[in-house]
Structures are given as C-alpha cells and as structure tokens.
Length: 95
Image 1 (cartoon, rainbow, N blue to C red):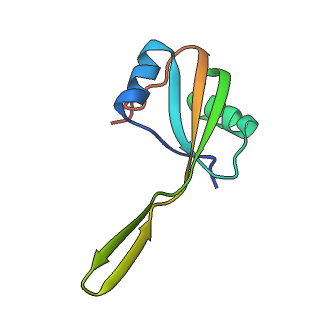
Image 2 (tube, rainbow, N blue to C red; image 1 turned 90 degrees about the vertical axis):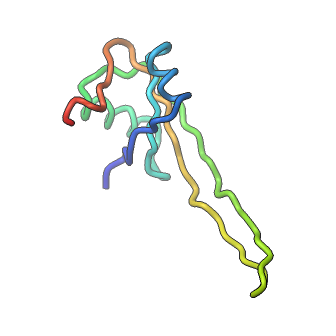
C-alpha cells in the first residue's frame, strides 16, 4: 500500500505551494514522517526539507427525523505538509 493517497487541492493548499513551496498530501493513517519524506522524494524527484503531519478526527452529525434519530460521521484523515528545499511539484503534467 502506498503512503501517499492523494494531493490536497484547496485554496489554502495552493497558496502554500505558491508562496512557501509547501505541498499538502492526504496520507495513510499509520505513515510516519520519514516514510512520507522518502515517498515524496521517490515519486516526484524533489528534495524535502521538512514534513509536518496533522490528524483530523471524524466529524459527527445527528439528525432528528420522522423515523428517529439518525447518527452519522465522516472518516478520519491524516494530512502531511511537505516543504521542499528547491524545485516544484507539477500535479497536472500528465493530463
């Protein structure tokens, strides 16, 4: 199984990549910083300066309907902020 799941494409992530050379990825929950660094360097051919990780828990929601109480939740997500020493990552090069 791959450590990197997908790149995050939001306004905040795009701003970080343009201004700070920092890219955001959704990663496997059991991945550590060293594995993430090695995977990014091998996949994109760049040199990684720093890796920061964030664990987001599930968001829970409750709805009261005619049939009763409906309880739901979203999935937990782990994100990694990868700052590069030099160079850029082009996610749209193979389109």
